[in-house]
Image (cartoon, rainbow, N blue to C red; front, side):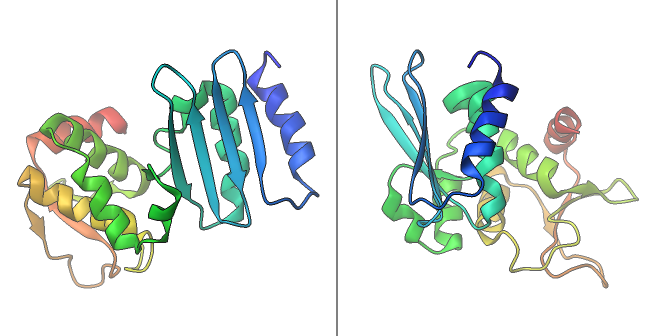
Length: 192
């Protein structure tokens, strides 16, 4: 189908009310596929270009499959870049969330890429505190929420040399507070 919304609506109607191990959506002209694996709790994306590659994402909630399909219909393989933490092997999904987060953080080897990822994490879950002195990540969340994302963020904070501070009394246990920094100011302004 030429229109992503039409494709999504047709696929959504097909997907709902069925129970299968695997659903595959293929974009033949682009040489790309999306594989939804509900029983395995995973999504895979595949690109059959000059250098074929596939990546896999752990899915904790069943309501993530259809949004993943919509992103694929809109922008193919690349449309899923920020949908979650992708790994090269399905077996990587069995690792602890903290190990997955650390592996994701290790993939960022330049300051520019690392600060971009920190900005993305902040855009998903953060605020600027009322005094404009701190960036708060995982705002109003407890420590068990998004353990992989938190582990990734903590390593990136260290890599970038950002100053993490103790959360004030009354803050949720999963919040990560970081002192304002010109690099964060610019990046978070871009994501806001």
